[in-house]
Length: 285
Length: 312
Image (cartoon, rainbow over all chains, first blue to last red; front, side, top):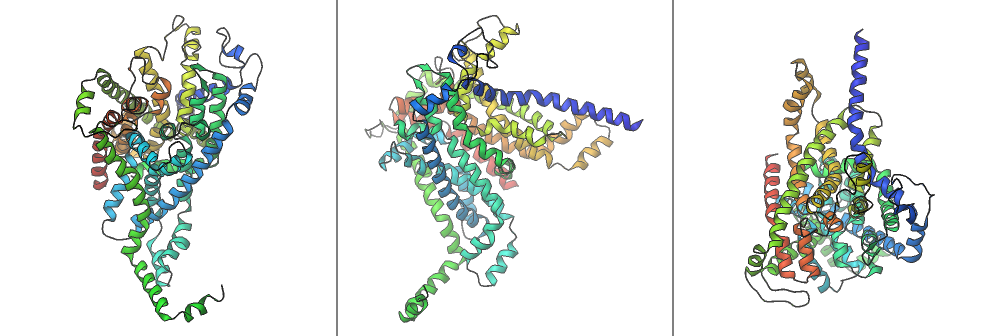
């Protein structure tokens, strides 16, 4: 009797959970579904007020995708995004490993205030600095090149990754490190051979977030680059697929879908790292 | 390579001694520590601190794109503060941040509570919930723009067919109040996952005993949430709310793509107005002054964060 009552209560509680989660999941996913469906619809159907917008009635077409590849610089934009993301991420990770290790492990005067400074720059939103940075970039002779983005992206990646990695470096037991030093290893060897291998999950996390942040960045990419051939995928799709004042929704959505693919792949492969990085970066503080 | 050591030896003990002295110097904890942060520090000084100083200088000068201007004191600020568009932007920013943040807190905490309950396909559900946070915001906002289209809006189509509104329905991005609602909806949509997942992490860390004790005391599930869960979540929530405040307040992507600040400047935020004045208009002085209005709030957030962290 008790058992059956318990089971019924459990069932009711599960139903309650799912019923409440359903609207959230719908809210989160519907826009993506709709973008996906739109990208495969013919223009005749897209702009027909009578047809139901939720699914495809008059046949799946791939014209919008073909248009991207044949008539626009979509592939160039994707290439730019990839190159910028890889370089900016690589540079930032190296700088962050060095700074993060130093700030979390080594004792020297001012370490605490440097840590605070890193944290404060982590909170500075890019929208506060894009105007003066656009001038700095032009003084360096980098306006309208992809290098402008390669050197400015680390400004928000380094504080974030350093902060994230400091948390991971702190979990490496001090004794292991001290043993290596006593055994005659240099500090550099200790960092590279002992500490880094133990912080691999943190490094993967930092790589993942950096890549995504670079790929998704919009403000700087919009501001510092104006020539179509040097644009990133996100800016190319949002700015260059609109001709005059006319929105070609089919190709716009096709571009948005394709330009999201790299991020989605990374995300699906490393979901757990993503969740742990998100909570570590924000909550550990 | 094998010749290396002999060559070194032949070169004499003096240079070898210098090398080992250098190594010894580098091995000092203090030197090594400074050495490792130097590259990151150089980057942050030259591309964050220096531009920040420039922003302040620009805001105090008559600086236009391509023509460095002279120092004009607070003239830019005076001009901005008497400008109706700017006043509208201040109002917009506070309405936008207050409403979006409230919705994210309420919906986010509730979502976190739901996610903490035992469910099947836990990973799949969390993966789906986080997706809006992962996909490039500019691109998903483009999708929302299509969903809010003046003629073919799927939102209106659904509402009309469900008999909720009469055709043609609101012009979401073309009418003041509706445009603000649209911008807030997209911001909440995109920021909710971050709120929920970080709150969930705090929730999972609450020891089970607390709930069991409350249950033994006969507390209802509502009072358990109100009296046990929420107080224990306070530290995590404080951090997440402060984070979200600054990034909501400084938002650019969503407004820029959805409305460009329109209709009639009713959705402009500091960042989008600064972009319009500073880059489209070329008035870097005024643009920088507008962007700097983000700073007082940033300062307050930093202050609270640091106090909170120090306390920790």
